[in-house]
Picture 1 (spheres, rainbow, N blue to C red):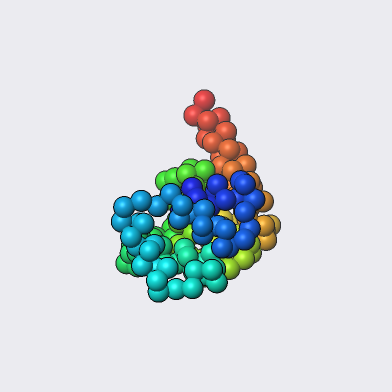
Picture 2: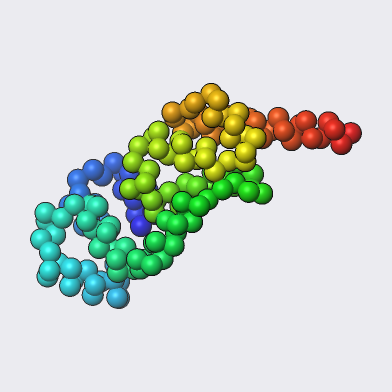
Length: 154
């Protein structure tokens, strides 16, 4: 689904019905049979892209697994990960918590709350509302800490 959405974005498809047609075009075997049953049960021409994704995830990405990934997102902390590793995991899991992260400010607060304590306190003091700015500041702080630790070792 991520690849499909990337392709649709890259060719600038915005119409939900066209997105669904293009997404289902390459379905084969089980997916093709599943889609045929969906078209018999739903008004596909009126279906939104979000509804299509929800039906797809219900079939191929079971609810317990989605709940597990949402919980991983909720409890995600940086721990021993670098900021880049933490950010990658954060971004990967955030798609399963869209109702938790409703806007940029929510996303930013969640990202900052999972950072190492020292980094979190420095970033929180500056109060970032934009996720990319908070992540960039975390990367800069991490680099400073590494430089300082390397200096101590020498």
